[in-house]
Image (cartoon, rainbow over the protein chains, first blue to last red):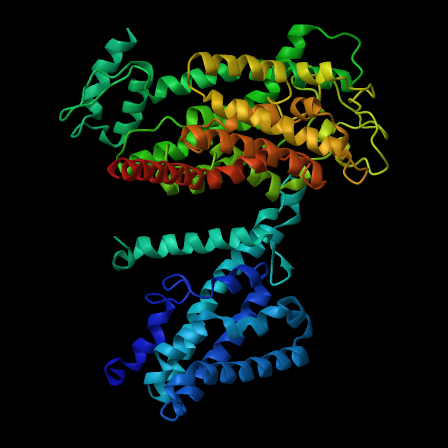
Length: 208
Length: 402
């Protein structure tokens, strides 16, 4: 099965057709939590890409030596180790963002996308393909995060990456930032809109 | 004459006509004006002259007392706040009319616009649900809500609460209340506090400018009570006079446009009950729930939660409780449908409304959130009632067989 899928489709399928967030609907919790601003969303996305790609590679390398009975524990240990490394790196080099993301970097361990990819792909494929799969799924996750973060920060705070985008004259004319956009429920609605647009464009994704 | 004109232009809208694209718009207008002549082509159908368009019209009629009183009250509050020398009835009414007209127009244009587009797109008839929603939204919003906010919120709730779920009759939440909730959470600064509920500026030369001086608040009674941190004191109106229960019953208090007058709401309720459109079970049990919860919180009143000093009767008179009970909780689409379910649903709406209002000082009015919360639970209540009926009958059959 492994060799039949081309590396290209492994890398690019998760971006749209098999997107982990809007098609498989995994990892929704962190999408709701970290996307109030664009910057944490991007950092979170990069962290997930790194953890996902490397854990995929590591699990793929040792896939033949892991006893089936304890494979989940092994996967968790690998992911946990990588998450701690990422967390420490962020604390060292991007302390402010790390504080904003707080517990959600640690919670990457429980992100369904990771366990899903390890179980479904890395356990049965060669390291290079697994690496591409990790990058692809991480990117698919990041794209959604960035889109949601973009709209939430733009409409909720009037800024992008901390820079004010909505001109001051709008505020003077009576424009007010939408407070609901800062709250997590709105992230769910933005994700729903992305799903809506995507299903409308790809008829084959529509459930009967 | 209108009938003739409609018949003459009708062929244009039939399939193949040059205005085919506007078929549903024409159809909507025609059936709005006249009872449709066409009958079902197949099968057996029971038709009642009371179709959903007539129901909507009666609900709109029942809202008229609230609307007119809201106009009067808006003008009255402005005249009172600007220390007017006299209170001529017609200029007060005209002021209120001019204040509310842009809001009604905004909600109808935005809401109906979306409905028309969606109906056209799905090639369906235009559904008439927005007729009532469009008048409810201005009635439950503060008079100073900016028009663009109203438009955004209306569009949001019509699209995400109604059309996404399949249009009129399929919405899981009350559309008007979601509009209000959207405004409340998205723009809290414009939806509460001193300024939102009093129309402060003259309109077309009518009325005066209201000056907000220290110690005199234009906040709603419940809004004032929620901020009484050092013990319960009397509620004041914009001119600094104490508000009596009688004022609150008549509705001469600051508040969202159409919800202040309990008297007018009761007139509307009578119309809805006589015509049999709203469920008396729900109305009765909401008021009962409010009274019970009001009595309980009043019994264990603490200075920590100033609103608990209100008597149960005042709980019903102040704020949007009565309006929510009569016009929101009884919405047939989102309420429970089984007989017992309606009692449970209504009681819980009443109780939760008072609990939110009293024990959360951040939300001075709980009726909106209570109705929305129970909307979400209505199907569950119905399911439980139906299942218990089924199991009772199964048991009865078993007992007979033995």
